[in-house]
Image 1 (cartoon, one colour):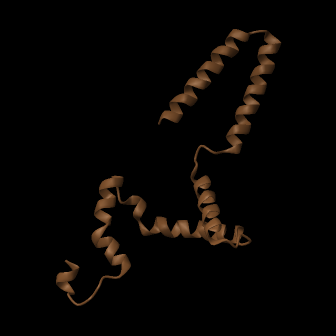
Image 2: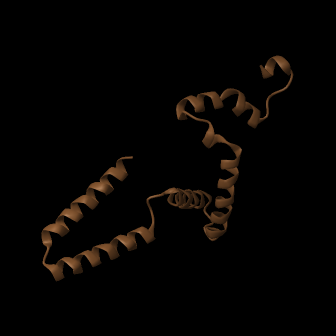
Image 3: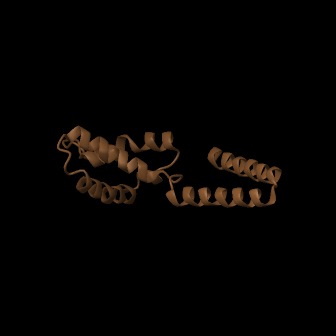
Length: 124
């Protein structure tokens, strides 16, 4: 289409991607939502912070690897120190309660239920 409208011009890189690659990406990903420019711009904000964070790493490839790893770690929704701390505190309380009451069977049932719930959440 572009070549028919402008036979003597080459498309700019963004136009090339839109005309020749987006449809394939949409088929592969099942959506175009993550390709929206707003998502890309939001990522640039994070990457700019990582550039400052890793400014002391002068090796370009290593710098990119560190920035990519940091960005990937930020996307992990299951990574939460608060939830890990809360879970640890809950286990501590549970242990104290079962020790006081001597109800080890109830603690085992609660632990099994908690593990089953975590297993269901990770399968989603």
